[in-house]
Amino acid sequence: MELSRAWAIVEHVVDNAPAPVSVFVADTHGELVAAATMDGAAPDTRLNAQRKAYTAARSDAESTRELAEKVRDDAVERASFDPFFTFFLGGVAVFEHGLRVGAVGVSGLPGEDDEALALAAIERSAGP
Image 1 (cartoon, rainbow, N blue to C red):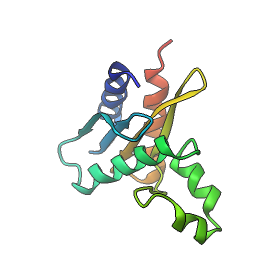
Image 2: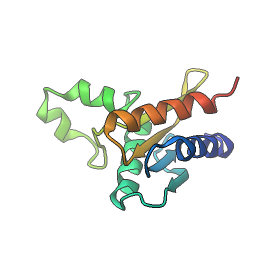
Image 3: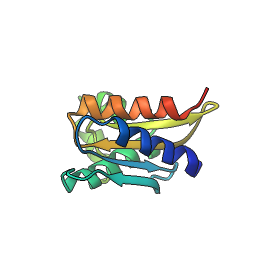
Image 4: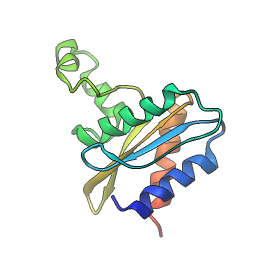
């Protein structure tokens, strides 16, 4: 993922979050491209946002939601995943021309809101 798009995602999340959050934008390996923690965000939101982005970047699912639904009824499969994976909502893969280029993780709000904020930032960063 290009840095300019990663920054656009971070800025959109920060500008539109209704309360303090952390946002982590990762490359396809789950490694940092850009991140921010808003003033007042709980310290644990940093690691949670990182884990959400990492999971969405490295798994075969398009989001932490999708991955959680896929393995919901299979404790053995859940236990076999990378131990840094998380199933909390708010991790969403980023695609360009059908190829995964990275992922976004947002943490600090209820999971549904984290996910919605990530999706909106991805959509907005895609341009016209």
